[in-house]
Structures are given as C-alpha cells and as structure tokens.
Image 1 (cartoon, rainbow, N blue to C red):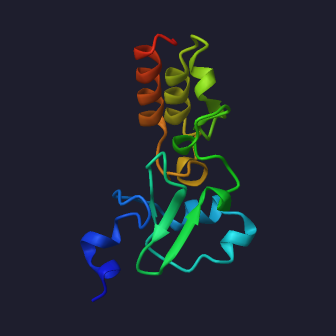
Image 2 (image 1 turned 60 degrees about the vertical axis):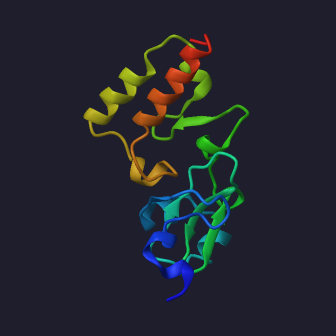
Image 3 (image 1 turned 180 degrees about the vertical axis):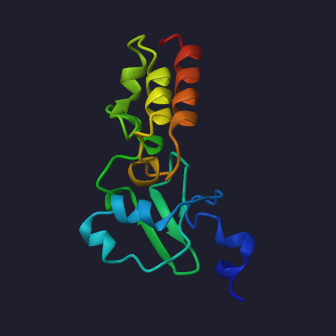
Length: 145
C-alpha cells in the first residue's frame, strides 16, 4: 500500500499537509475550467482550505490536483484582495458584510426558501453560512463592522 493510499494520508493535501474536506464530483464538474475538467480522473476529491496553499482540490489516490487557476471562480478562503467571495449563490463578498446589512439573515432566509445551490456553486461544496459567520466575527473583532 503506497503512502498516499493509506486512509490517514489520503485526506492530507500533498502541498500544505492540512486535512482536506470531502467534496463531491458535482462541485468540481461545475467549477473547473474546461481544460481542467478534461484532467478530472479521480473519484474521491478533497478541498484544501489552507489559505496560503494554491491547491483547491486533490485526490491523492489518483494523483490528481487542481489549483486556483483551474477554477472559473475565485476561491474566497484563498483570496486576500477584493472581491473576496463569501456566498456564491447570492453573490455576496466580504466587502458586502461591511455595509451593515444583515447579510447572514438574508442568506439564511434564501437557504430556507430552497434557493441555494451550495453543492454546485461553492468551491467547498457545502453551505457558506459558517464562512459568513466566521468572516463577520473577524470583521467585528477588527472593528470593521
């Protein structure tokens, strides 16, 4: 058994060494550029959330890696300059959180109404509300909201 195929190693980003989150193929198929999509040959991809790592998706068993340049959208967790996307379904950026509008409530209402498509639009393949809450907490701590 190769090091990459051991269960404990399979989930670790080959560049940053951080544990990646499972992400469905639907997410990759929706967000990869056409050129990158033609290289899609894994089946168990993970999302690397390490901000300083250019790797976005990896499948160690397949030896497959996609970085920021392989996506058609900016990956908010990996960006430091505006616009920094925070909610992909409703086009919300970190700058929008500074307006004083209750963006989290708006997003929550839209999610409850069934209008979100996080598994397709968010590079993490999951709901953005946790990211929105964390970004709001950081902005509040910095006195920016």
